[in-house]
Length: 127
Image 1 (cartoon, rainbow, N blue to C red):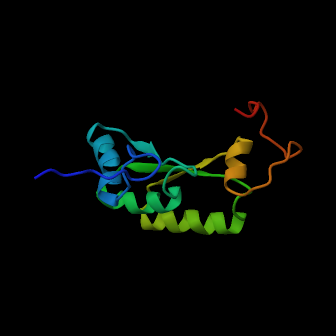
Image 2 (image 1 turned 90 degrees about the vertical axis):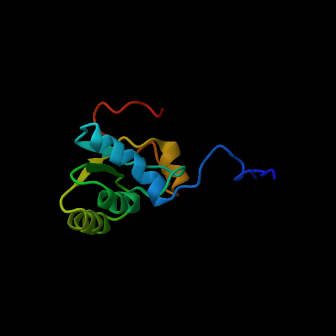
């Protein structure tokens, strides 16, 4: 009996994420002695904040760094989200204030980017 594999969409090499698959990376990082890992952020991956809350239950002490992008959500909602994540993960959330977000990433998330918007000192030109 032969099994025919069906493509998963436009990128057949991409495995659909599930929590067991995603948890393999932080489990391995913790076993190798890492203190923290960066949760990917972008339109190509799962929601970073939700993933960050789901993964610590699969590790003992590993911390998770997640990016906060100003301008995409209100400061009040961001503070509430971070505080909730910090409680749920028992203090294992690390925030990364991503002030140098590139215009293309902002546009992909529906934010209107303006060249006149303030950027952090020394920020590189859009990559």
